[in-house]
Image 1 (cartoon, rainbow, N blue to C red):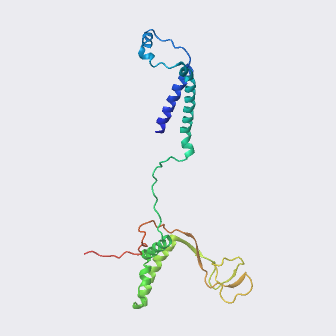
Image 2 (image 1 turned 45 degrees about the vertical axis):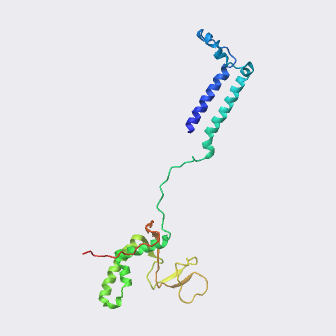
Image 3 (image 1 turned 120 degrees about the vertical axis):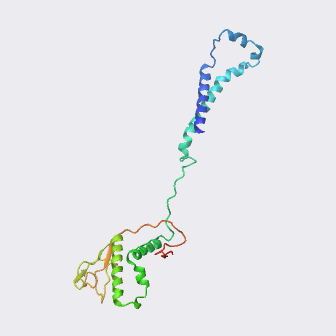
Length: 227
């Protein structure tokens, strides 16, 4: 529609420009036109002299209005910014409302799948002998350690053997040290390393996308053998 409007205005401008340039000039017509122009039918539509005088001014005014209309059409899109109708964009998958909870459950499901951690913790191990519990603990340990290595880069907070003497610096992070015993004075502190602690500087948990907005993911599905 915009292109059609531009073409129409351009044709109007061209017609008025020609009329303005040729207004007031005599035309030399072929002899065959003389009899036609002298007929009563044509003379009935001859304009009065007063109207003929103002025709060049009307053409000039129409030409100016046409230029204004053309400029308005060409600048409408720039002033308006975006076009009225935009292309439909694909909607990206939205995260679950309980995003953090869903990721925790998903990680717990990984520990269950590879290390049977949930089975081990939820079972009553008092009903089993120590040897059987120990054998099961080895399976849980190997599987869960593999999961931790896949998703975290874990290393000790403080290097050194337990029982060795260490110095806690004055600017130590409060979450990296737990000071035991009687504390007096200001840091740095000297003491014995009881546990070297653990920390991680890399976490690679998968992002859980919307599956069902009204419930959390399943830790482990129920297994049914069909017969």
